[in-house]
Length: 118
Length: 137
Length: 254
Image (cartoon, rainbow over all chains, first blue to last red):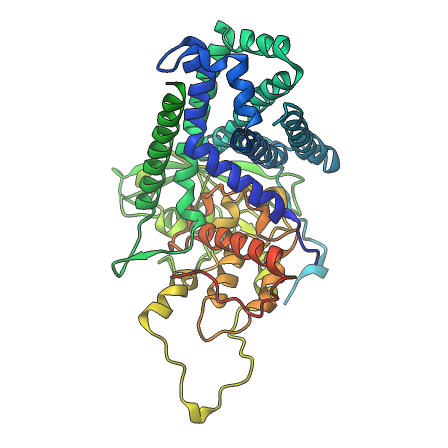
């Protein structure tokens, strides 16, 4: 019998799923509809200076990193299994495509949030 | 007890092709699994924003230009619907994933857990919107 | 036979391995009354029309678990499913995800192996001497495992589970429910011996929370619950096993 390493990805899937279920829709509304159209929230929230200040603050960094990474790992796990459900059992290739993307995104987010400064 | 040696046996294995299309329960399952595509898409949009921000004002303005475009806004309406359906289906399944809970000597019903989750989602969303509004002032 | 009786077409997926390469559909016209079950419809076919039709059955009252079949594509017990609910025509096939032995009879060796594998009996660290008397359990202690002990091994949940269909090595709903039943029994101290089956690559993490197993279960066992609770238990053990080696976790909080 071989012990599964699924718990790592399952916990990330669960955390991302819970976070997106609780506040995902609100976030999509804010960044994708409200601010861009100036509905309920002002367009100036997307001004460079404000966005930079947010990303430079440790709270802003934390929020952005948590949202981006948990959403990516949630999706990676679910889509890996969905591929399996659809009959795509490419094993290592599927894993690389799904979890690899999440890892690449995590690293890219961390690097970007570091390089905006403090 | 096994008759495996008789030679007349030829168990037939049916293929799994198109299994999910044959039952509405499975069609719904595939739909709620597919919401993950939109969760990933939104995360990548945010990631693009953060990367552009790190590259300076010009890149950031490019991202803002895209996200304020009618195409992006329409896309986000679709993404919003997907997230809403994800939330609904997530809390619908949640009772199955929790150990039996008791309150006041009685077993807590699955529907109660689902309702509690949806209430928590509405409350958290309201809080997030409130914080965004407060920050904007 | 009453001349005015209504009839139904029962389309059965036949498979005679010594005669045919492939399964094929055969339709029988069966007179029926509103109180007749699908099982009784099959009995009529075998008694009056075609004696070669093969199927499993026994109690006729949803307790033996023998008569599980796909009825219009849904896993059901034939004895508790009624012809009146399928006006005109009903399609009956062998339970999904199992090799068809013959007609409506499936090969269930895999499930029996799994049942044996998870040690479905009370395991004690040290035998309890007779002088100590019997085990006592409070109603709450019984409630902790009672639901999962109701399984009649009918296999509807395996027919419902697409993950079992895609990976026949997956432990599956009923075996995991039984594993959980014993882990949750206060008389048992054998969790540590059973959990490796849950932790395994073909264990609980094959489940993607489809939930159809619990939908079709005739005894309200809720195997989906058993499997998913054990995902949490397995994950807890995975992360804490080096920090705090566990013996036999009693599991869920009240």
